[in-house]
Length: 390
Ligand code: SF4
Ligand code: SF4
Image (tube, rainbow, N blue to C red; front, side, top):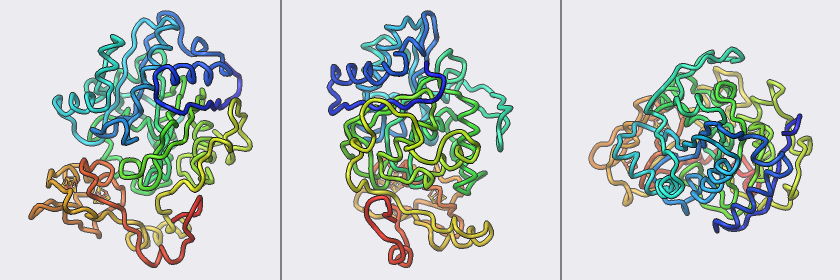
């Protein structure tokens, strides 16, 4: 393994199993190959992104072909035990977990590769975090932290709250079930939430990160956006450096991504992909033109008290955009940490004074019935298009 963080980028145009396996081998080669990370006898946990029950082509979850390639690589390196999984948003019953695993394609991978598939809500341990800034301990899924090697396998997506979700944000799924929603209540400010995520990174310490950027998500990610072909795999031993490069591929100024800004503030990564050592394909050649972004949080430019007041007025708010799709399932109500949404008369009703703009409801709506609506004053003030899109 390299002494200082390197981010490796490799073209991978399709999810054809052979193509993905070859691309994974190529993207890991400059980092020393999988054997630099997984040793004979190791217990490996592969942390997928399984936000919600969704088919792989919706680009919400990590594609099963990428997970399969990572599992096969770990096996080839001699891992003694391999498990994979996640804790999706909200409360997940055993039946819901089974449905999620089936729909995501991971149940099939687990069966065919003979590896364990784990809901991280089942078995939680308290993990001390001496290097933390905000949270000196976390409750985390046991399998993700008691392994020898945690392999973090996110999909490249935009994110309404953090702007971008990559290797750092993917670790939020190591926190079990509804505790995730409680963090939105405890840490409603986006910059503070990102600091919490960097604390979480320090608690989890993934040994290897492999990003699925074959098809990413643009627009209103992480679940309500549009799949967008990028055609790449990225890998690094360092989640923060990986996110600097991946968010640049997605057209962001990395410092506009809250997790990158928090990591940069702690000296954990540079502010620009130009200052990251990259190997393989040039990230600028991989970057798609005009990747659509979620709305920016303009209140960030103001002092905290004013920002809180402004956030309620200028931040995007969740709205029922496709009423005909709403099944009145109550997922939004059950997962709202601020109890700011109630389903009555067959549709969600929002209390925008109570709403903390965490967007859990929009992320987790299984019918994609919700959108984030930006106030007209913000839309008219902010340029749109490419990396400046509001
Ligand atoms: S908006 Fe979505 S999550 Fe809320 S009740 Fe309707 S379908 Fe369910
Ligand atoms: S209504 Fe939606 S965005 Fe507002 S606090 Fe609840 S879950 Fe978060």
